[in-house]
Image (cartoon, rainbow, N blue to C red; front, side, top):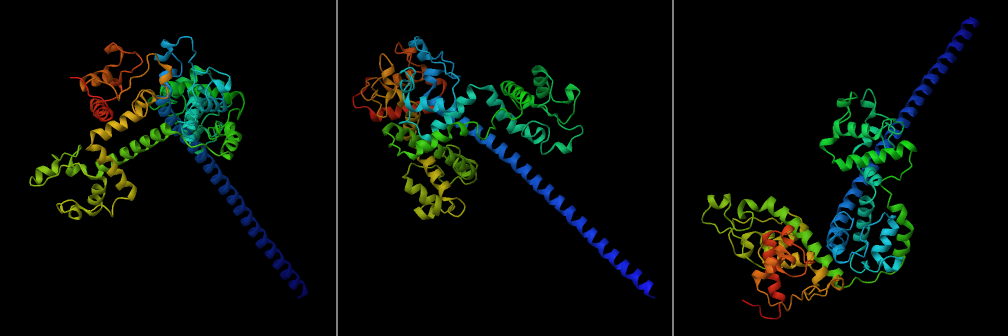
Length: 462
């Protein structure tokens, strides 16, 4: 009997130990699963962050390209290689943009050439450009002059999902492929091969069909840039900075120092350029809202004549020239709010305040050629001709003869239209006056001529 009790007791002990062991194994399994889940989340987060940073850097470079075109092309040319109109006038000045650090670009843009031991021909732009605009141009120039940096942005925007952040072939989606994506840090293929497989895809090269045909999505320059970047990671992992901080790291200390100081207020030129560009952006947003909500009745140009006019011929659907307050009231409250037709619905509940304000800005320009001309002039012309059109723009001192004082011009509208369209050389005037017909459409040029008429203080000739 005692022997039976001992056996039973031992059995209970073994059962408890077995249950405890199984429970421990379950907990260990759960721990491993939890660790794997955390690792998986971290991996996804890292790829998301890097991709997002690369896309933001691309957007920043795109904004910088716009600022560059507005302020820098005249001297440095479209690609920063010089050879511009200014080079022909001053061939003794080297206008090619050299390859500098982000800090170097920032310094010379803000303070001008003389302040950093370069040519005094390079003006200081810190009073005319915002901090954001200068930083955008710095990013653009860093990419403009460095194929490796450009390639890094392209790679981290398109390739890391499969090849991984570091190019080791351990991307988020690598587990879906057999064979797995290549470890690009250990690739022994030459640049020509890499260019071909990126352009034509893996299948065309007898490799995995999982490698896409990038030639239809990336330009030849982008593919060359990626190949240049791959050359750096195959020599040493993590040799180059990630796209999310390749500019920020160089400028971090300088930014802290600058922001600790009280900024001087921007001068009149900067304020007007900035406000005009903001107004232009607002008008563009308003145009999109107008297209989505208003075109059906009012037509693309606000003149009626739309599909709705054909159905309701008794309605007056042309948008007339009104004050901004009127436009806002009729958009928010409908036609009855201003004593007009109830056919005009109330949009106050469907559009945000920002959308309403944007449409009001769009309609104000849509029906006023002088306002439209003012925006075009102050976006493109004041660098030479000045805010007031008196020929005293920021770059006026660089020209001989100087830009025309448009407030005292005796030329008629037809002449002004021709010289804007064809450029100064075609009219026997200064070749520095660009051929704006290549960049502005006929309506924009007509609007500028209408605007110039309002700032003239002398009678024009016939």
